[in-house]
Length: 151
Image (cartoon, rainbow, N blue to C red):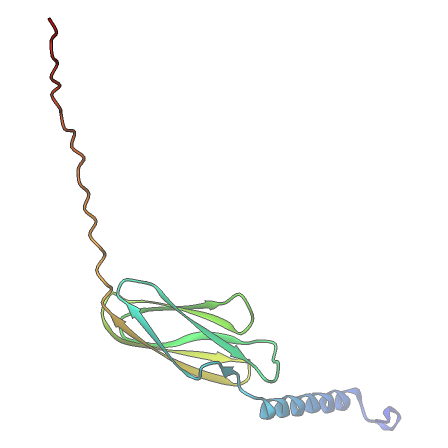
Protein backbone atom coordinates (compact mmCIF):
# COMPACT_ATOMS: atom_id res chain seq x y z
CA UNK A 1 0.00 0.00 0.00
CA UNK A 2 1.39 3.35 -1.00
CA UNK A 3 0.39 5.87 1.66
CA UNK A 4 1.75 8.72 -0.48
CA UNK A 5 -0.93 8.31 -3.15
CA UNK A 6 -3.91 9.09 -0.94
CA UNK A 7 -4.82 5.66 0.47
CA UNK A 8 -5.57 6.29 4.10
CA UNK A 9 -5.07 4.19 7.17
CA UNK A 10 -8.81 3.45 7.29
CA UNK A 11 -8.56 1.53 4.00
CA UNK A 12 -5.64 -0.45 5.34
CA UNK A 13 -7.57 -1.20 8.56
CA UNK A 14 -10.67 -2.32 6.60
CA UNK A 15 -8.54 -4.52 4.36
CA UNK A 16 -6.88 -6.12 7.39
CA UNK A 17 -10.23 -6.71 9.09
CA UNK A 18 -11.60 -8.26 5.88
CA UNK A 19 -8.59 -10.58 5.69
CA UNK A 20 -9.08 -11.60 9.34
CA UNK A 21 -12.77 -12.39 8.69
CA UNK A 22 -11.80 -14.49 5.69
CA UNK A 23 -9.26 -16.44 7.74
CA UNK A 24 -11.86 -17.06 10.48
CA UNK A 25 -14.41 -18.22 7.88
CA UNK A 26 -11.86 -20.58 6.39
CA UNK A 27 -10.96 -21.95 9.83
CA UNK A 28 -14.64 -22.61 10.55
CA UNK A 29 -15.15 -24.33 7.20
CA UNK A 30 -12.12 -26.57 7.70
CA UNK A 31 -12.86 -27.40 11.35
CA UNK A 32 -13.25 -31.02 12.38
CA UNK A 33 -15.93 -31.59 15.02
CA UNK A 34 -15.02 -33.07 18.40
CA UNK A 35 -14.92 -36.88 18.46
CA UNK A 36 -16.75 -38.70 21.27
CA UNK A 37 -15.06 -41.89 22.47
CA UNK A 38 -17.69 -44.64 22.36
CA UNK A 39 -19.87 -42.68 19.94
CA UNK A 40 -22.68 -40.14 20.32
CA UNK A 41 -25.02 -42.66 22.00
CA UNK A 42 -24.00 -43.65 25.52
CA UNK A 43 -25.90 -46.16 27.68
CA UNK A 44 -25.79 -46.40 31.45
CA UNK A 45 -27.34 -48.92 33.83
CA UNK A 46 -28.29 -47.59 37.25
CA UNK A 47 -30.21 -48.53 40.38
CA UNK A 48 -32.84 -46.48 42.16
CA UNK A 49 -31.73 -44.12 44.93
CA UNK A 50 -28.05 -44.36 44.01
CA UNK A 51 -25.85 -41.80 42.29
CA UNK A 52 -24.25 -43.24 39.16
CA UNK A 53 -21.63 -41.63 36.94
CA UNK A 54 -20.76 -41.80 33.28
CA UNK A 55 -17.47 -40.55 31.87
CA UNK A 56 -17.56 -38.83 28.46
CA UNK A 57 -14.16 -38.63 26.76
CA UNK A 58 -13.76 -36.17 23.90
CA UNK A 59 -10.81 -35.38 21.67
CA UNK A 60 -10.40 -32.82 18.93
CA UNK A 61 -8.34 -33.59 15.84
CA UNK A 62 -7.71 -29.87 15.26
CA UNK A 63 -6.32 -29.41 18.78
CA UNK A 64 -8.75 -26.55 19.39
CA UNK A 65 -7.99 -25.00 22.75
CA UNK A 66 -11.47 -25.20 24.23
CA UNK A 67 -13.73 -28.21 24.58
CA UNK A 68 -16.87 -27.58 26.59
CA UNK A 69 -19.92 -29.66 27.46
CA UNK A 70 -23.32 -28.89 28.92
CA UNK A 71 -26.60 -30.73 29.43
CA UNK A 72 -29.09 -29.22 27.01
CA UNK A 73 -32.15 -31.45 27.51
CA UNK A 74 -33.43 -33.96 30.08
CA UNK A 75 -36.25 -36.40 29.39
CA UNK A 76 -37.96 -37.89 32.44
CA UNK A 77 -38.06 -36.96 36.09
CA UNK A 78 -34.45 -37.63 37.06
CA UNK A 79 -31.42 -35.62 38.10
CA UNK A 80 -28.50 -35.16 35.72
CA UNK A 81 -25.45 -32.98 36.32
CA UNK A 82 -22.17 -32.52 34.47
CA UNK A 83 -18.75 -31.28 35.49
CA UNK A 84 -15.25 -31.21 34.04
CA UNK A 85 -13.07 -34.19 34.74
CA UNK A 86 -9.47 -34.12 35.91
CA UNK A 87 -8.08 -33.69 32.39
CA UNK A 88 -9.02 -31.83 29.22
CA UNK A 89 -11.76 -33.43 27.19
CA UNK A 90 -13.10 -35.53 30.07
CA UNK A 91 -16.57 -34.83 31.47
CA UNK A 92 -18.35 -36.56 34.34
CA UNK A 93 -22.13 -36.93 34.09
CA UNK A 94 -23.86 -37.77 37.37
CA UNK A 95 -27.33 -39.38 37.44
CA UNK A 96 -29.90 -40.04 40.18
CA UNK A 97 -33.51 -41.30 40.14
CA UNK A 98 -35.95 -42.57 42.74
CA UNK A 99 -38.02 -44.33 40.06
CA UNK A 100 -37.37 -47.21 37.69
CA UNK A 101 -37.59 -46.77 33.93
CA UNK A 102 -35.60 -45.30 31.06
CA UNK A 103 -34.32 -41.75 31.24
CA UNK A 104 -32.48 -39.68 28.69
CA UNK A 105 -30.33 -36.57 28.55
CA UNK A 106 -28.72 -34.73 25.67
CA UNK A 107 -25.25 -33.26 26.18
CA UNK A 108 -23.87 -30.68 23.78
CA UNK A 109 -20.09 -30.91 23.33
CA UNK A 110 -18.32 -28.19 21.37
CA UNK A 111 -14.83 -27.11 20.43
CA UNK A 112 -16.07 -23.52 20.23
CA UNK A 113 -16.94 -23.93 16.55
CA UNK A 114 -18.86 -27.15 15.91
CA UNK A 115 -21.30 -28.67 18.41
CA UNK A 116 -21.78 -32.44 18.70
CA UNK A 117 -24.78 -33.92 20.51
CA UNK A 118 -24.33 -36.89 22.85
CA UNK A 119 -27.44 -38.80 23.91
CA UNK A 120 -27.27 -40.59 27.25
CA UNK A 121 -29.79 -43.37 27.87
CA UNK A 122 -30.10 -44.53 31.48
CA UNK A 123 -31.92 -47.74 32.35
CA UNK A 124 -32.91 -47.72 36.02
CA UNK A 125 -33.83 -50.88 37.93
CA UNK A 126 -34.70 -51.39 41.57
CA UNK A 127 -31.77 -51.32 43.90
CA UNK A 128 -31.12 -54.68 45.52
CA UNK A 129 -32.57 -54.81 49.02
CA UNK A 130 -30.17 -54.05 51.79
CA UNK A 131 -29.34 -57.10 53.86
CA UNK A 132 -31.10 -57.16 57.18
CA UNK A 133 -28.63 -57.43 59.98
CA UNK A 134 -30.04 -58.91 63.14
CA UNK A 135 -28.20 -58.67 66.34
CA UNK A 136 -28.61 -61.22 69.08
CA UNK A 137 -28.63 -59.87 72.49
CA UNK A 138 -25.99 -61.43 74.59
CA UNK A 139 -27.58 -62.96 77.57
CA UNK A 140 -25.74 -63.58 80.75
CA UNK A 141 -26.37 -66.99 82.05
CA UNK A 142 -26.25 -67.15 85.77
CA UNK A 143 -24.73 -70.31 86.93
CA UNK A 144 -25.43 -71.36 90.43
CA UNK A 145 -22.37 -72.60 92.07
CA UNK A 146 -22.69 -75.48 94.35
CA UNK A 147 -20.20 -75.75 97.14
CA UNK A 148 -19.55 -78.85 99.10
CA UNK A 149 -19.07 -78.39 102.67
CA UNK A 150 -16.39 -80.48 104.31
CA UNK A 151 -16.95 -81.47 107.76
